[in-house]
Image: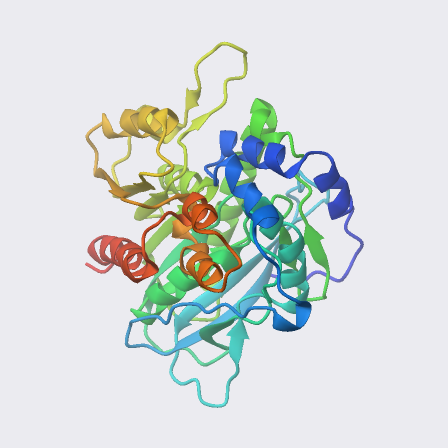
Length: 399
């Protein structure tokens, strides 16, 4: 692990990427390759009422329910010699956040969910992709974790988190904090170049560089998944250097959308991982030749001998999920499938708790909220998802 000196990042301006496609087309393309909200969610920005800048809404993250206070630290990892496929850099740079049970939080400051620079970029890109309204101060949300608080001196199970396509790791904060409050070390991972924004310690902000045609390009979409899986392998190799006590024999992974697909296939490829959760990610590739069927991931082709949970929503379920998930289930391994009713795709991210706040504030219509996260009350969805994820890892990593 090392911090690389500042250097210019070769990337097109964010506006260049966005101008290549309309919002609706971009989101439709994303949904073909990685499970993201339906294209109609992009209408939210045009149908919501925006307040004046002075009235920007501050959103809240649900408090974790476990007995532990939380510490958090952010680390910059560099894998020397692995060429970055999106900007051509000779080394692959990653940013991760580590949430962990803290010995004390007294005298330490709570961490923001997003840094000001990252929040501004999110407002300009992810908010546009997800159809989120103007009038939100994305940099004002505080977490329940305290920066560099000392960890409890007990070795903990560790779980990695991979976010959905174009989403930053920060949109998985609520679930990560919940797990950490119950005794896990949680490592959230960004995949730079395909993420809306990643800020490095020297202040560089790297925005999305992945071509907008990637989701419909069978070669580029494979490259995206290959890169994600290599990122996870590298993070696994760095676990002993996180600066907090972990148990390397008890390591799991979960992810949302493309991150869910990453988690499942990473379980297949890395025996260091003992269990995984796929939160609504497809398990197949687009065909290399037109007219051919989609190609199943190796895990769906061959099955898995370690626990895997497939969790989806009734609002986003389609034939592609049924086909690729059923192929895996047909192997009769330790895999099970669950579904959340009255929910939609982004309910698994922090937007599951935030979209209802936007609706209550008059910034999002009921219809747009339903397209994004479903109609389920967050008083039900947040505890349900937290219990589903935590109870699975309790059974598979805490034995």
